[in-house]
Length: 487
Image 1 (cartoon, rainbow, N blue to C red):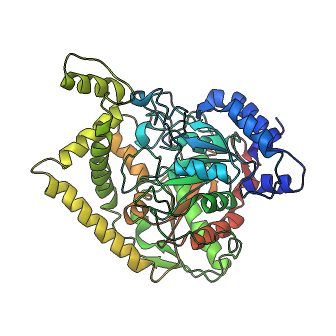
Image 2 (image 1 turned 30 degrees about the vertical axis):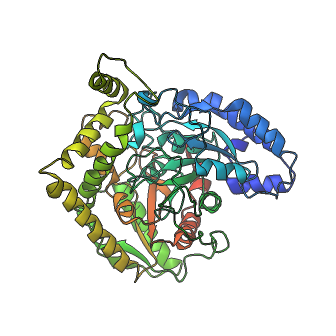
Image 3 (image 1 turned 90 degrees about the horizontal axis):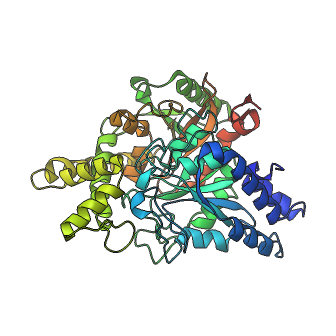
């Protein structure tokens, strides 16, 4: 391996434009890296070897400056449809399913010159925070193989962190891009709800689900977001306006930005490494010329409960389509009810079954108003409160997770503890706001710690500018490498 697979998107684009490397060399290096490193990580469910090499060779005949993601290998989470290729959502119930179409994001990646290199492992149907709920094996964290990579986009985060690919797509319903980005020491971005089309994304919770990039740095996330974002007539929830220009102001710095830190974080149980990184970041933004403020963060006590009521209710409805009749797994029976029962019992894992049951319960007669109705009211309150906050500030800075990666198996018997991994990420999903995690430091055990920034609706430009400014202060990628501590 030549090390090309571990370079950032920006670094590769600059090498291409100088004529120093060809896409085929990069793709072959990625495949070599996957062959060696994924034996332990378990990040990939399928690698598109022949197709990726053929695409790279074809691109090699084009002008390197002709497309914004020219020759960039990208892995795609396995709940995003790829035409003629398995899309399982990490579930037995979709084992072997091959969609007849590409998701919009896959079409846009290809049009931008990216090379789809394979599909990444994930918690089944996006339901998990550790990537231990996949029907096809768990994923391991490249920084410590005994630890979880986060979820549900753990395969995508681990693939980037281990230097197997420069970038990957994940999905974020309640933190499933940002939490694994934090655990694996990479950058992960979710845009404003509707910024990237969901057409071709297998739905978990439709009012929360979003597709977004994971990359080794902020520039990579910005390049991917710029290529993926935009209106789509096939997705009624897609924002009709074009995405703001994200690259021209990326290096404008922190000066002049008003960045707030939640007032009440001291009341939450934070790992010492997380608290230390947050304090360091607060001091750094003052030195950099920003205006740090303190704000009351709305809905911290109620956001996680509201999220899990609404998300599980939507999951109960969305997953009703997997019944063994039209596609995917089919367990035959002598009655239609028996077919449904046998197929769904065999096809769904325990966590998915738990969430379907909870979602069905809160939607049932007598409980709809008591649970689902109240959760919707809380969501509205949180959304309005954030709208008020972002009328006064530019960015909100808070931890991505309460602590660094936990050990595999540690929380499997305690679902509530697993769910609380998302305590700091779910509010942005409830309010539909753009949010990003960037790596900031290491714990005493050598595990990455991420910092999260949240911006007002539609302000991905400010979000990425702030993230880039913090990235330059932390210099994480220059200082640390997986498994080796200091670089």
